[in-house]
Image (cartoon, rainbow, N blue to C red; front, side, top):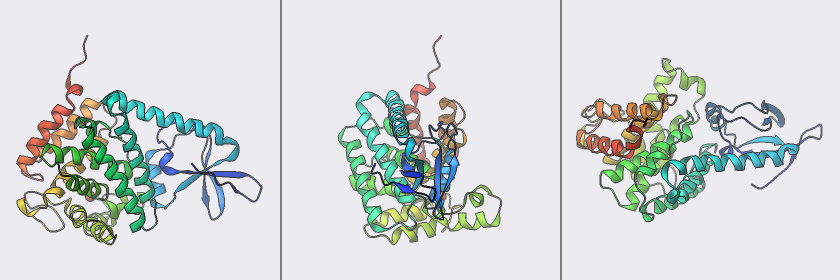
Length: 336
Ligand SMILES: [Fe+2]
């Protein structure tokens, strides 16, 4: 982290911390500040927790950094290091030491996603950097002959839109591999499409997003696939497959979806995969306070339930089988 000190009128010194470095739902070791209209305002006290919804707020407000006071720098950096290590270790414990490097790469992708999402207007340059990071991650996933299950066990269930996008991307490439897609370019397209599937919702205020009954929400929801595809399509080097995924991720197998009411084979296959992964993670997050076993059961059940309706029945069947195997150890009753 490069350190650029800023001072307020009273001579207090502040240091910026990228929001991607922050960990939600953990006790802070020092107060954090926001810089608004050139003033530093205390946002959270030491010992407070930063809710994952606040990460969405930062994305919405295009805030790339929060600030801490210079005096807190050393303990704060130490805290960040420990938190990073802890969250990587937790996943590694779950997936096995042999996958540590993949888990670390996934953390790097997460940082880039936050960086991209907090950009006021995503530009081609930053999208390109993200794409390179994604390539690196997928290369590692393919080269290390990773057990596919790792991809669905690296998920981070909070409510932040960035983490939902990353989860959707990881689940989507898992599903794609299950369905026989091994082509590097295809996996990259799916990953990028999944990361950007709700791009048009990123700068919508939390108040609107939470009020699902409002007309405003309805309008945004109805328009987000096309708007997102247009926004993402403007970037150089983003492939057409990626924009098609964004545009079609709410189409349904039985024709009841939107924006175009496409049906069956008329739906772009890669969009159907992202659509399943999206619902899977949405349901998992809705059940995030339950035991893992229940959480994943609920998420798997929704795909099973919607086969032939929202989802292609053959695809859904294969994916459900694979998910049950991948999460197998959550379904084994505890001994004793
Ligand atoms: Fe969506």
